[in-house]
Image 1 (tube, rainbow, N blue to C red):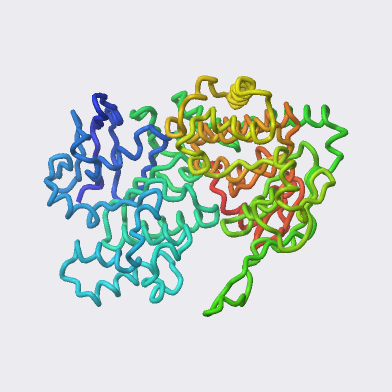
Image 2: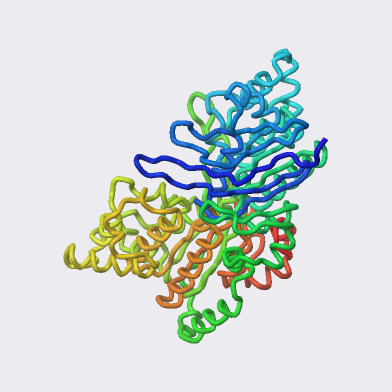
Length: 551
């Protein structure tokens, strides 16, 4: 049997949108051997996912075409994927080539249990299996991906599982029919660093056991260094560089590859960061000695109600006795896994969640005891940048209205014309063109929408901003731009930031102090350099050990 499993030669994939033709993939060639992991890297829109969907023949025939090129399974008699009829392609999908999609909640049917969905896939490709045999095999697949209590969890619905568990279910479904090639499209992008480490370890283990090939699509070079044998870098539908992973990472030849690597937080110029922070310390020496934010024994509990009369039987301790101090002009990173209470704490500081006990002082004013009406004057100075800008921007309002409305509420600007001028200035501060004011959210990329979210906070001249996972779903180069914008705004306006994230590399680049949160409690805090270089708590050590690094 040939060592080579999949060969793509000069593939072109064009998509028709109205009268326009988008050349999504242009002259792409690559080869994947059996038992090998091939990583496809590039920014959003580079053509990575379209290449994968072309291999699976999942693009709608009404809009997709392949003017030239070939995709072949290298059997004794090579099979041309582009020429295979749909009925035959159904046999190849799942049994020979399987795919894990980026967002498991969108890929799993919410009205069927996870067991029903895995069993359906099994019986399509192995119709000889009885219902009982298929169920046993589905339980075994869940056990392989380390889902706890698979005999019970097989009857759960997707919404009852965590993000990491749903991703494991997708892997179980893809691997249940023992495919020869697994295509993984950004399978760890939105996962916590420890869950990501578990998923990557699991995939490598399953690959070793089954001699399976993997096409791994990602924009995370740390993951590439950990997973790949070979690497191809895509830009604007073309592969601009490919080769052995260590060769490309240590000695990149193409300028685009060099730019991507240079944009990684661990490779961003530390001297540049040091210079910015030195300027801040010099210009705000007096202010930085003053506590702007003080949190004392803050608790946020959510009641668990049961029974006919909905009696409270227990509480979810989302934030449990947290105390923190943030100085004027300081960036405090709040780090921890999903569900640890980071976002709840951030929302509680801005009175978007009610507190159970404790106190929160802003500029020596205690806010937790104030009514919503009494809090309103402080909202101008206390702002929140949300994780998903598309969900937080009203799709029916253009950007001008989005930026002007908060100014009008807080009495900033004497008339609409003045507010438009201020809105244009806010866009320029986040490196967007003033004419973008008249566009709608759907007309922007993810990175541009995140900049608009930052601009919406800036128009109110805030003193303190909670940034909730603002770079978690962004490409590495866009992430670098957002981080530099935040650092520049801190320098220019003396902003104080609470930066919520699970990305340790970002923390090391942007923050002065770090607080590590676990199960509602702060388990370790201190200067960023000190905590990341010499962690004391076991949980902090686990977080740092799980971070995929280039070196």
